[in-house]
Image 1 (tube, rainbow, N blue to C red):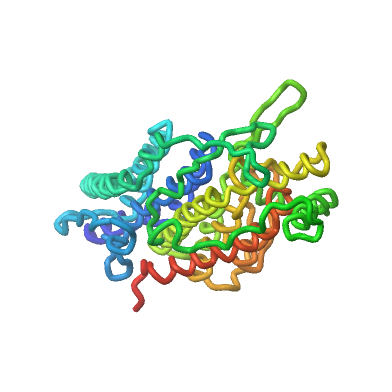
Image 2 (cartoon, rainbow, N blue to C red; image 1 turned 90 degrees about the vertical axis):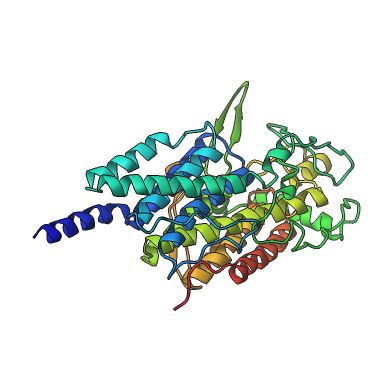
Length: 433
């Protein structure tokens, strides 16, 4: 009876700590911290990637028959500390703590997840986790998290904090700051960050965009500009909804008269973190598979942003708003706010297509779902027949929003797909039976 009682108590706390919904909630907690503290999309992708990798490495160590460590699969990651076989560890609980440890370290203010970590620990204790299992799990999670943090510090992020600022070139066709913030160029050196799967930021090149030419009315560039202007001026209700749904602006400056205030949404990467969670829920993935799906998606997002930013600052292309207000209609405004970085290629197109390829690889090409990620911002849900269809809509939404030419979105989608395919080819998280 004592053995039966002990077994029941173990099952009780594992029902809590092994619930994949708890991991989805934990990722959302980090997403909220990223939103509240105005992290730009590229930096947000770094936060998600390292936190998820830390959680995954714990899972892989605890279940090596089903999951393969990322050490040796992604750039410069060495083998993580191995667990002591003589000590009982709840690896699911440890993975949650490892995620939060790294999430706390890579966000600011540092320690933003501390209260939530305390809640997780209390939840485990209240569910009956034995003190030795609790202590062993905390110790192992810390060991893995510290290993991931040491690796993360060599990705050139710190060096880019003090890199030279972007110099605005006001030659026609070059990007310049746009209203209402007229903000400096965002992260012009992000292409120098160490990728995880790509050999380099330039591994998957993009063709040159059409050259700037507003004198040839039959030229590709002129037609692209007019297309954006007319599209924004005649948006349907559904097109407006599409643009709002995929806006994902982490910091929109609203100006009313002499007053100004900011509104926040999830970044594009944060939106796709939510979609990854939806995929795991539909598939009824267990805890380990849920962590793996988030991790693969976050790696694809991270590398996609690095590639995209390399292309953006190499092309340095002007935004539609700048051209239209200067050459066609000074009173014209895009439907959504123009972000502070060059136009070509579309970041949302690249990262969405990359994430969609990974999720399609994990869950299939015919996973219909409803995305209610934006409901908390007062934006109605949208339905999609597949992850790829969602990515294609995300790309097109940037044209409806008036911040991209269609070519940047088409090329961005193609580039993102190639990155996603490469991630699928190079990474093997789940060990096939």
